Length: 233
Image (cartoon, rainbow, N blue to C red; front, side):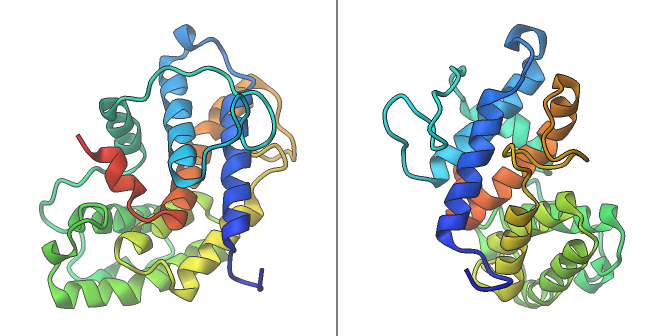
């Protein structure tokens, strides 16, 4: 893999490791943490939809997967909408896309949400005026670079998804953000946390939303359209 770009093999490896972390835990019983179990199930679904099926009885890391409840369309929408705004349209939060160019994580996240909403997760670019789309196509690579420089995994993952929605999957900034996320993955397969290996259930629960968000971003970059599929009724 050349510096600053990711490879398909690196993507599949990162998604397999993320899936393993989501499967292996340690996790509390599903009946005591329904929300966490739902997030894990959706993260596993995203990894599976964006990568080839593993050998029977194994996940891609070589370990036997834990059983999971069926992932319904309603569950996918509920979990992903909690991580990023579902497409609803409405008034823009920005007078102009260039107003989003601030080193403020909340602003960067709102920009990613807006592009996802305005493009129906990349399925309807015609909903966005040509001049607005052109402006966002200039803004998102800069915003991504800002997130990467700030080592902001949360904003980086959201902006990476938004860039793919806008048709910028092959842009150098988008590819570089994919490489950034894979480089920041922990040895145990999750994302976030101060320790190289985080085994405590409490720490894992804190890392769960970020890990699902990063898996979601890598899945969308590897297989554009998986988000729209997740939200399909």
